[in-house]
Length: 400
Image (cartoon, rainbow, N blue to C red):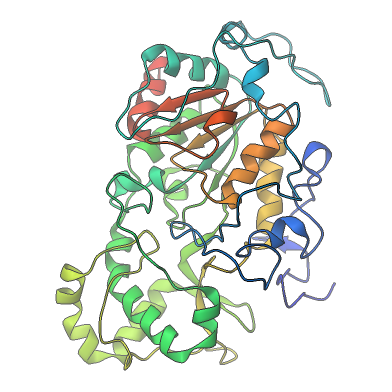
């Protein structure tokens, strides 16, 4: 097939060498036809090109207005899996695995979903145990957000100490040479600190849990730092791309961000000489951006293959996630019986849609976050606390 210039699907219909299949069953409607409702809703305020609200600074995804999502459907009887779940059912010994297409009978709960709590609130041990009982031995899809990487020194945008920021939109980046100069200058300053980030105990614990008592079908991450892969998780779906790659917007070629970094330093020797001082003073953002003044003279290279515009291989404000990536993420969810959310406020639809899809499929949803989330009312079990602490507790509970 010929590549589509709008969604940039590959000619082979593959990504990373593996052929991707379209979700089926309960997830068939989650990934719409090309440029359909679900991908369109990732644009600010509605379908592609329409005016609307700004995107999520933490992920680069657009944040449409609240309300019914055409791709998600109206809330129905399955709007809250917690209505059918009980701690007794979760604690019961595992029985025969249901066959294809079978539904797990969920019971009336002994307790309802936990209300949103303020930052710093800790769930009691029995709540952590209820969540672990639900995960143990069940194929589980994992969705992670910025809170997963704060322990690696990467800030988030909605944590208790977050500073409001206004990252660049896709339209600004593509439409203005001055905007690209500003972006690359700021990104060059932030890149060194971003590149120093290492997997934290939470990343390592998740990989260890997945290798043991909780069969993880895959990690869907809203982060762009590549830390799950470095911790040993596999497979990992980078929903919003990877900051260590750069993609040509004309020929679609990928190159290394580190190589581009070195090239830009050689093109801007005076800027490079000031870099240590700039890095010491600049405020760091989750996407590797940093606050820097006087960027209009910064030089950046074109694509070495075609002369096109180079852009980080991450989803900017006003830009849709690549369709084949979203499809692969729903494949991960379709192969699971439980969804575990770690460190995401689920404020934007790009992450929230996976919770909604799990609820529609009557999959239990476990949410772990230090602070409230947009999907607290849909959580089967809601755990409050730091990701590293909760995962360490689960590791001990699993005897790891």
